[in-house]
Image (cartoon, rainbow, N blue to C red; front, side, top):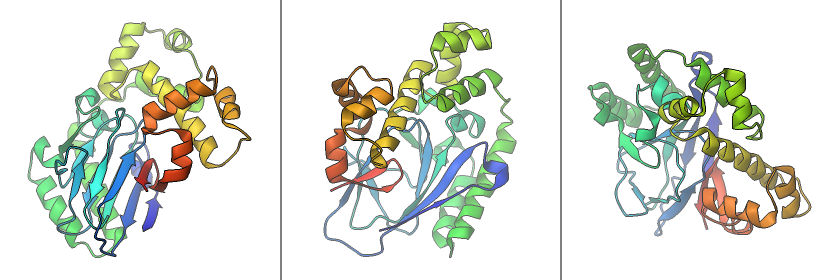
Length: 271
């Protein structure tokens, strides 16, 4: 399975973390199971070819242009025979800033871009399938997103962006009281802004940042024992770290190392 991660054009860096491509042209008799891992970012998944069908854990077919929000609960995606898709990992605030959506409307769920109105998503799906290169597909998606941003004309939310930046840089360790004092806002105001702009509360996003920091440490094997990861990332003990890992990944750190093949970042194939 071939995976490629592509940085966004300069004019989209504020909205897009990266584009990605996953290709497996060899037909298999068995379906493949993938488990999204909570990363604090919404995204978009689209097929590279016709008849590339994806299903969720309830055997419900996913939309062709599948726009999803924050993924907190355990999810599975099943690919029948092959997995040939491309995706966009958006910045945490993209649902509001690109599409004009209150982000909590899509938390733990997804929608078809076509449901947002207009003919452009229908043309986009056809154009992406008929495109003859990765570069062409990236250009098509970029043009669509730029048009959406222009149409939406969302105002820059300084409070949400500053709080978001502090949480990410501190890997979730900055206290919410400290954030409120720095930004001179109330707890209720900050929580409302986060749910609208990001889809989760500031407290939950801080926990996601801390989990992602511990996950990166686990991936790089930068530890001697799990208790080291727990201690260095502010968990009470190893049991606390394992509980949080199961909550956001759907499996324990041990099973992640043994049974998860993370061919796509934060999107693990379950072996």
